[in-house]
Amino acid sequence: MAEDLVQDTFFSALKSLSGFQGKSHEKTWLTAILKRKIIDFYRKKSTSNEVSLVDSDDHFTNDGMMKGGWAKEKAPKKWSSEAHDAMESAEFMSILQKCISHLPQKWASCFILSTVEEMESKEVCKELDITASNMWVILHRARLQLRDCIEKGW
Amino acid sequence: MISCEESTFLSSKHQHVKPSFGERIKQFMHLLMCVYCRRFSNQIQQIDKAIHNLNKNAVEANIKLTTQQKQKMEELLQNSSKH
Image (tube, rainbow over all chains, first blue to last red; front, side, top):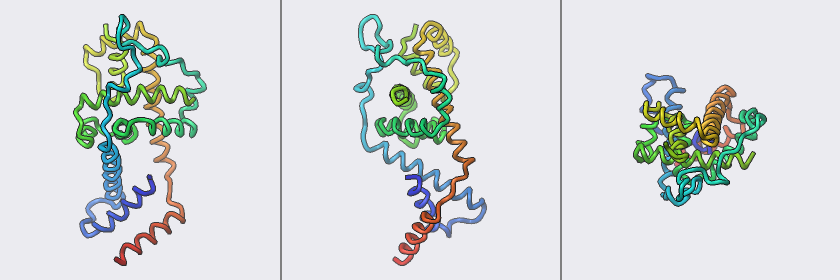
């Protein structure tokens, strides 16, 4: 996928070569086009299906005295110190990728643009056409699911 | 007192924006008593940090296209310029 986006970037650049005034460095120009391609890629993905946020809500208990408390089997376990050291490894990278792919597409797009691409939250809202409060809810749900998935994949 | 659901929501949000004074108090009180939410908060911070480092390492690795990839692109470009 990364390769496709890079290829696409060169195509677009060549097509609009006449529009390039040479005011900025070629690298800056190409990076800007690539950045746009990445955002568009995740934006397109995120519009494909809308997922109800309430349905997948099984991390917390829904009723009784402990309403809003951790569901027994979802409560975070202690991570070993080896797990902590391994977070820089290629193995972690592959677990992370797998876990992100299990997220609903809209959540994944939102999470990737916010953390991997390190975009400002305002910008993410604009690109994905969601409200700020909606975005916080999505990021919250995405992290709950990701953390749980990583814990199990370890 | 806020619930674990609210506390984890704040932990996630504060990875991106600064907490308000009220949020900080509520969160502090909750984390003081709740080991699970303390773990959650620590672990998501670790995850975000790992992602940040992977990003940094990728830039430093200075990944280049292979000859094969270059050839494929060249062919595609030549084909498209014919039309």
